Image (cartoon, rainbow, N blue to C red; front, top):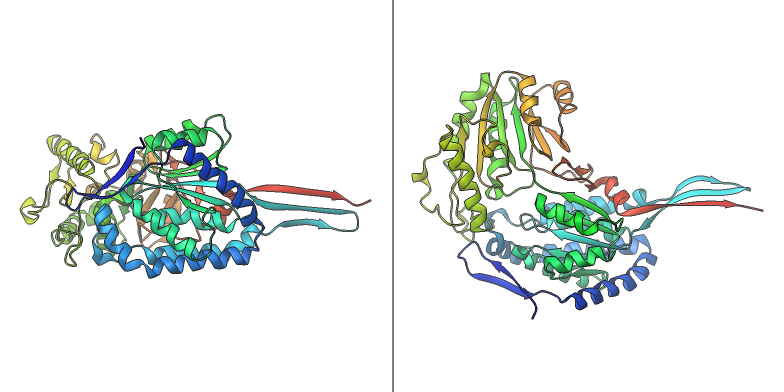
Length: 459
């Protein structure tokens, strides 16, 4: 009997959607269909692939009201924020706009004696293992350039957001992307690992936990299948003495708390210079005290439940340990009567140190620790004192100072005076336990294709 994959809604603990996982034989048959369909898809003119993919994105936009409510039920994001379509459209249109340049041959010579050039060839079948926290945005980062480059795509979505995979398939199929070229498959972990181990895919893209990333690499071991990963994060913000204080507080606290803190590049630790420390903390607490924790289907709610009770309990555990070790919590629990189960009140901690898990391990919830620092050197050392490296946010009016600091940081992206944003023109990447590889930008097309050299001598 097939395993049943369930989404337990964080709203009320009910089973919101469930699907039977494909059997190994059915999964292998789906991959075989993708292999056959990919050959024809690759032969289509690039502009035709672009037109169909962008039409699929438009169809997704037409479903946005439905999708927004489904996201609230599946992973708890309040409906007031309107879903993810704006970001999906921005990224898809940018990647379509650069596809011609990114995939164009590199002409070395075309003379009476030789033809020499490098072409980009699709990898074949791309497996996208997508997470629940931004189920459309994270998936689209790879789906769109993979399809435009001539690959077929198999999407395995997180159990928490099964309907996101269904909606993506519905949109793309309705726009003329062949069903076998883009497939959303409900797979359990053993079947996924077995497919990877059988060399079913030319590329595997995984966004999720460090443990999950290790499992993907273990499954691919010895197959020479390329694996791109975006795993955990513990992203820091640093507020310098010449920063715009109000902008820094507003942006960093939003970056820490939005989506109940369940953001890949959310702010999880903040370092503030002595000059601004007291004012920063005071303003931060005032912002958080205005949040409304509650049912994400209500327009007044600004903070919904975490996606699963166990995620909330993990944050509670980290917070309790920090408090027992000397940290202080500044947000009054009495302001958040709905706290309990998956519903987790936001919290700001001070008197924290790097001996505490709350400042070292990924929290992925609505809590942030704030530390006072004396200078740039101390801030740099603390920002680098992490097993992760996804983003860092620097707050200063001096771009040269920010660049000097940025080049010393062990991270994938450095922001100045903003945070928690993906620019599709820039490579989205990380280092250390955050993983390796890169999506978006020209780099995405390099990772989703292989170079093929032509050296023709004319006789």
